Amino acid sequence: MRHKINSALSNPVHRGMKSMRYRMHHLKGSPMLIATENLSRIEKLCIIEQLWDELSRDPADVESPAWHADALREAESAVANGEAAFLDWEQAKARLRQDGT
Image (cartoon, rainbow, N blue to C red; front, top):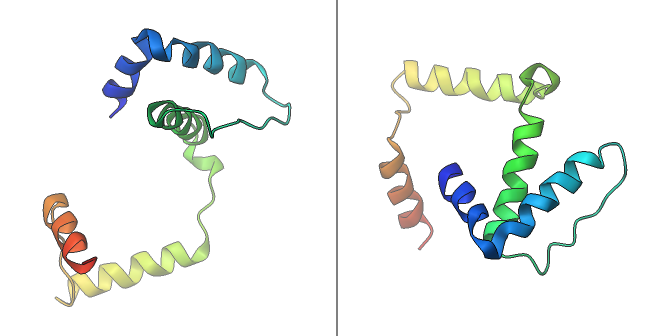
C-alpha cells in the first residue's frame, strides 16, 4: 500500500500533498484541523499513513488498555485448548464476506 500511495504523490494531481505534509510537519504543537471533505481517497489515505507513522514511531509511548492483555490471554487459551484456530488472511476475508451477506 505504501508504494501505491508514494507513487500517487509523484502524480502532478497529488503534488499538493507533498506541500501539505511539509506544512503539517512544521505546524507541530499548533492546534490544527484538516478540511478533508474535498480530498481524494488517496489524499486521505496519505494523511492516515502519515499520522500512523508518527503515532507508531515509539511503541513504548502507546499504552495498551488492560482488556487487551485479557483478550490476548483468552485467545491464546482458546487456541491451546483447540477451541479456536488461526486462519490465513484470504480465509479470514472470505469468512467475513460470507458472514456479512
